[in-house]
Image (cartoon, rainbow, N blue to C red; front, side, top):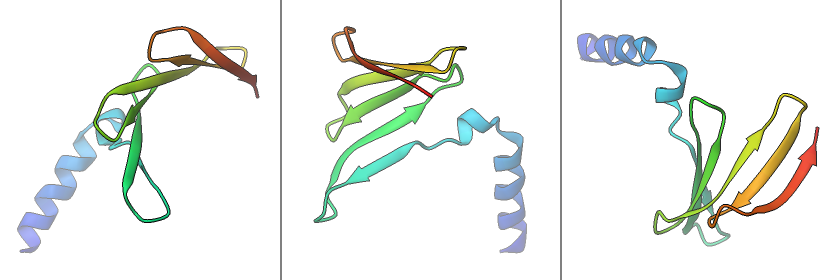
Length: 81
């Protein structure tokens, strides 16, 4: 059993950080999954509904401005850090 645990840990350490990011899962008050978010290697966060459909994205530029896009690609808002 220790050998298996060691092998799993070594495998996880060998993966890049972006491959280890399993994303975030969002739940409602009853504990049902309502959606998820995952950030890729380029820093773009993609939001999905519970069925797995893309509902939007967010990207932060070098000036610290985060821009949100809807599923259609239109800008839905932005915020400055």
